[in-house]
Length: 180
Image (tube, rainbow, N blue to C red; front, top):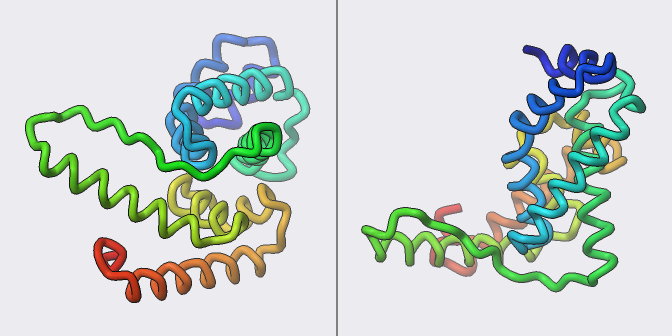
């Protein structure tokens, strides 16, 4: 079922179809939110709040832009609201690794993730969001432009600059950074 069809059905009173939207977007939104707020419990709460807001405001969505852009605008706004309210300091994300049979792999993965987080902290807020929306969420340039309310040219420039900045930092610091 296409997302536009699901949205139309929810707007026409078929509330049970909203479950499809949740199932389709829940993991993507959680991944985005946890990377921003860096707290699993808070991220779960924010994602729940996002779906509540989407449900009650779905009637406002018009096909002027993509649903992805509309949805991720809500995500970014909710995350910014949280960060402003609590003046969140950057912390590393606690990675859950289910397979405990290979402790050395777990240790290496955690170390690699910590170094990646340190590397990403070198970017400004917009560069970080452009990378996150492009590579984690797979949004198109026009969708990122709509979500962040910047021009497509600025999206391209930020993406290019942030990748160049990450490569530069990665080659000078060594370690796992060098692989990136």
